[in-house]
View (cartoon, rainbow, N blue to C red):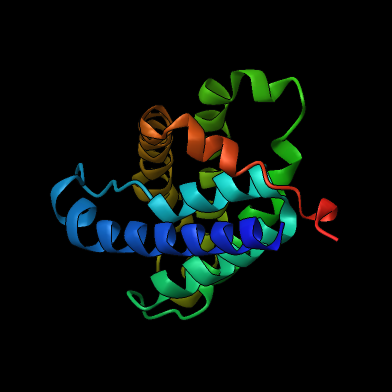
Length: 174
């Protein structure tokens, strides 16, 4: 069981690094529509939070947020937002939902991305002379919609073997 846990940690870490480099080198410059950009690390954080629980989602959200904080001047804000979203992702999981997860997960991403934007732009509007409503309507809402579409595409492209691998339950380890 420890071997599977270690493989899971390694695969999620590598996936997070690949998503980060894809986000910064490919998606931000080439796939942005206006100012809208999907947040791949938020999608991964939600996936882990729904599949593996609150602690895993929070930890990955914090580390992914720290990676993204390198790009902005307000250090720790993305880490805070993604930690909160990763923690709350577990509340979206029920046994009935897992049957239609392919279609349900983008809805989870949409609403969680809105929550992420409310926290993020709420703090940013306190720091500068920025209007929260303008930031949320121009950046938060379009990014949430774009992230939901990207979540559906990523879910459709993800092999079933990887999805089954992520159903790891640590309480049976010892």
